[in-house]
Image (cartoon, rainbow, N blue to C red):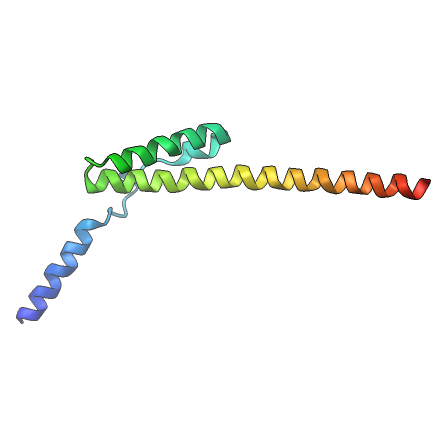
Length: 104
């Protein structure tokens, strides 16, 4: 019986460390999707600085971490898009060179 109580306490302790599943406890991250690369990067730098500075509650730290993850993902999306555009431009340039060489 003592082990069961200990397990229940351990389980309760873990649950307390997690944000609840309700939407009200999670930060609204929908604004991240509309950010430019520069805006997302600036906010990510600020978010990381706040986390590194400490002094926030566990819940606040979790919210900051979630926002940081969303901001990092947004930056990656912009960088992936830029990489695709550069690859397409290089492919067109190479195609034009090959076409010009075949016409000579």
